[in-house]
Figure 1 (spheres, helix red, strand yellow):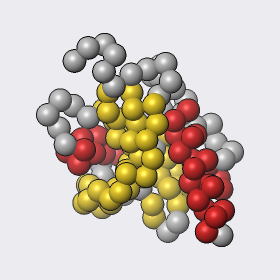
Figure 2 (tube, helix red, strand yellow):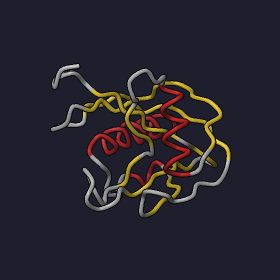
Figure 3 (cartoon, helix red, strand yellow):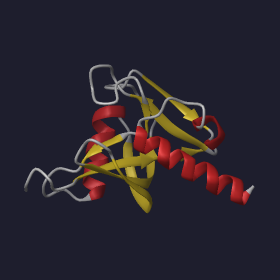
Amino acid sequence: MTGTDPVAVVASVIVRDGRYLLCRRPEGKRHGGLWEFPGGKVKDGETRIEAVRRELAEELDLETTGLGALLYSAADEGAPFVIEFVETLTAGTPVLREHTELGWFTPEELGSMSLAPADARFARALQAGASERG
């Protein structure tokens, strides 16, 4: 891998009762203090579902029961990351292990939140889709 190869990051889109799970990144990390869809980097040799299972277990003590569609993909400007927003099915109640906060938000609420840049672009796409359906 060269320094210019993109690094895959999976962002889990977890929906319960029409609300999306978001977490606030710890200060001192890239995009610290901003909200994001939970997830992380796909390690060499890992499948997307393996990465999601590992990340959600580590960060939120959630069991991943399945992956759905790839909903959106966005480059993280200024970094080699390509963030893939994927429908994720989970079991359990999220427990904070790395993030400073978590919450469940409607698509409309996402518009007023301080989101990491790629997450903000995905949230706008979600809102546009919601308004088209509404």
